[in-house]
Length: 254
Ligand code: JD8
Image (tube, rainbow, N blue to C red; front, side, top):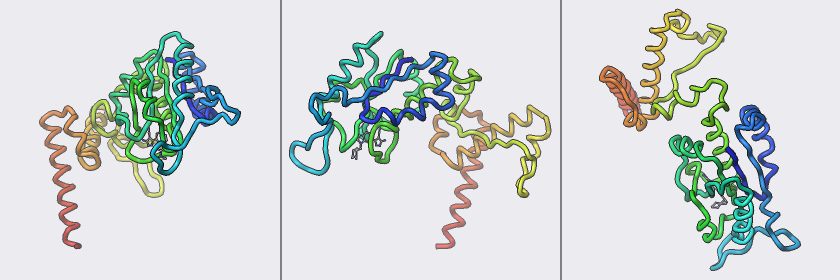
């Protein structure tokens, strides 16, 4: 996959792109990330990318011309035009299923803004407007890195173990089971006996139950999308009941 990133801070991407998985993916030619300095498409001495908002108000807005010119120029680098993605707090929330879809694209062009955001007209170039969550960041660079990280895990050959992207939380709509490694006891905290038993059928059943209980407790809204047997539904209901019980107990303190 080819990813082009348009930004006024291309150096922000150096560390995350050279680290571990993303570095290896690029060395293996499974991923080619190219960062472009938006200021290369400015025409004034100061390489200006922002201007005051029409109508007044605080802060500055990204000028449209450098963005239109940059996206045109980067698209014509080929070999395919690529899907143009803008990051904005008003975008569609990024989800696991969107990540999986985007991982199938041959090329993405990610446009990162700064300041108070973009001149609205640049969105006429967008195939997609994305947000990574309901909190405010200072720009689109971190969201672009989040997308590259998430998408790259779904490119065949990027993960060592091919199935590890598949059997996870957001595929099954269940949280992960708790994990442990040695030592068996640390500061008095014990690894559950069953995990040390060597009984792999029991271990698998325990892990599944833990996933269901955790999901019921911490992210009950996910259960609607989880495919559970009738026995598993009963476990979920039991855990939801315990949670309600605990909350009910709290009320007495009020
Ligand atoms: C792009 C400028 C900052 C946005 C005023 C200062 C995504 N989930 C997300 N949170 N924030 C962003 C994001 C923020 C951005 C830009 C993305 C460009 N800003 C502006 C409007 C309000 N601040 C994001 N994806």
